Each structure stands twice: as structure tokens, then as C-alpha cells.
Length: 188
Image (cartoon, rainbow, N blue to C red; front, side):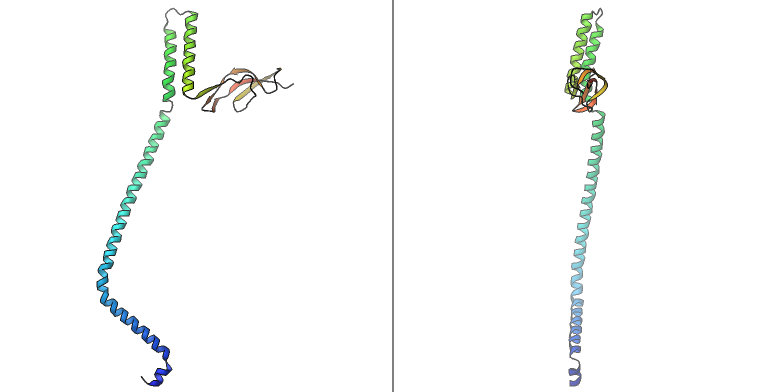
């Protein structure tokens, strides 16, 4: 190359140097390529093993979640099916009491009354153990959430006060099972 050409294209020198570096790197890559290929294969094999391991763990977790879901559904079904088991076992005593009362051969009014009284006590115990609470609101302020007014009668009590209960109401764990049927004091 002449001096004029060297002076005319100094930037070509940089391009030639870069091209030379790339070529040298390519030659070096060709030399180390076979050396690094087994390294890449090993990395790929390790990555495949790790992916297989994660896939197996995912499958196991999925199966476990399905088992938990199935067991929970079975528990819910059993709970619904046997929810009244405790109350039903308490009612057996009430039934026994009634049967004993009726089994008396020559019942007197007094023995029937005693049997009915015992039966009512057993029923009250069964209700208490099962969370059933009686609503007998005589003298209380009328509550439309717990009472159902069927009449209004003149009374000396304040207006909207329960003055008579026709049928007791019941709560189950604080929730109205049946409202009390009541008569309320009429406003003057």
C-alpha cells in the first residue's frame, strides 16, 4: 500500500483491525468450539435433569392438591350427612321417656303428667346441648327479627311491647329458627 492510500483512509485501518480481531476470534472459537461443545452439552443435560425434576415435583404437588380437594369434599359431605348426629342422640332419651310413659298398663292422670314432665325436661336438655334457645318474650319490646306479631291488643303497657305469646320462638346458635307468635300492646 502507498503512503497516499495510508493517509487517505485512516478509518479503513480501524475497520481492517476490527475485521482482523473478528477473524482471530473466529479462529479461536473454531479452536475452542470443540472444547466448549461438551460443556454446552453438559449444561443442556443438567438443565434437562432439572426440568424433569421440577416437572415431577409439579405433578406430585398437583396430585396432592387433588387429594386434599377430594378429602375436603368427602369431609363436607360427611359433615352435612351427620350434622344432626349429636341432636339425634339427645332426642333418643326423649323418645325413650315417651315410650316409658305410654308403656304403663293402667296409667293415671298423675303418672301421665309425670311422664310428660320428664319428657319435657329431657327435650329441654337436648335443646340446650344442641344450642337451641327458647324465645318467650312476654314484657319485652317487639323485635321483628325474633317475633311475629299476629295481633295488637289494648293494654296499659307501652306500645309495641309483647303482651301475649301464642307460640314460643326458638334460636339456633343465635339465629332465628322460628319466630315467636305474639300479640303486642296497641298504641293509645
